[in-house]
Image 1: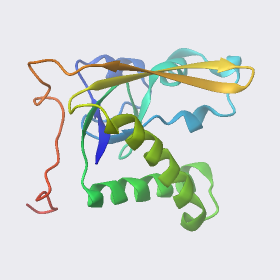
Image 2 (image 1 turned 30 degrees about the vertical axis):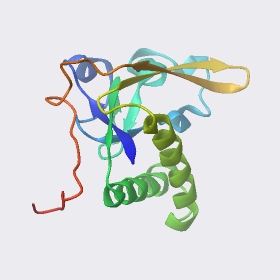
Image 3 (image 1 turned 90 degrees about the vertical axis):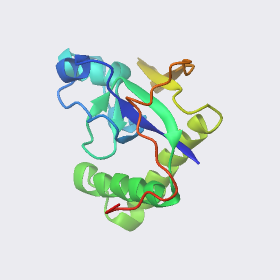
Image 4 (image 1 turned 135 degrees about the vertical axis):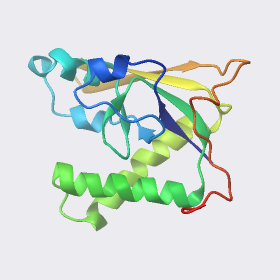
Length: 163
């Protein structure tokens, strides 16, 4: 099973986003955060988050790049629960029970996007406002021969908390 982790190649994310994600967080597109935005909302650092920010699932900050990597079932379940909690605490979902299916859908979309790419493939997102709402497009940057092991964090089946 694959998902994507936030990737920081330089310090630009710390300068362009109000709240940058930490390197190595599991991530989803996070386009839902902009569902009710209008042109007037697209100013400054908020515009940058809208235009191309992935959503990290620990800090709920933004990152410009994510890298495809393997995720364990336990990590996937924890990421789903973290996003469901965020929907309750940050977005006013009525309960975890109501938020969980939406979180599961967000992670399933990201998982499907990552599944057919080799580890270390870099993904970017670009958003625009249209008459129908937010439109997202994704760019795939193939993994290079040198690899991104020094940047991306890879899980192994024997990774457990405390090891």
